[in-house]
Length: 134
Image 1 (cartoon, rainbow, N blue to C red):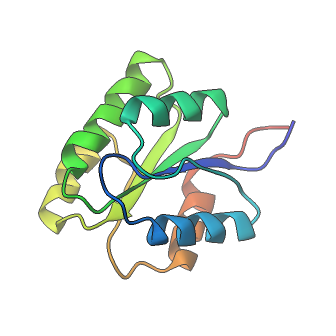
Image 2: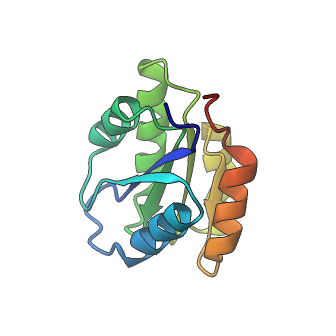
């Protein structure tokens, strides 16, 4: 059994731009974490299913489509329905500052806005996502 942090990185919805998600996935992997990248056009249901199957500690969502309120809300709801609220949800993308407090109320642990460095994301994950006990 690995004691490394496991993160599912996902691109929900119709957004077809995944460069940022791939850069973050690579940075987390290079920092010693296990990363499962789900690819483009994933449904919240598929993302949550993958996270549960992979025994993930966190889900990182990349949303550039403007549908962030709906997509994050649905992932949080599905985690609650599956009794998997211990999976930390964070994300980034083109998300207006005004929406961040509402996302936080929903249960999103952290939103990274454009300009966030991969180092800051890695450090945040290390400091806020518990690695499983081996």
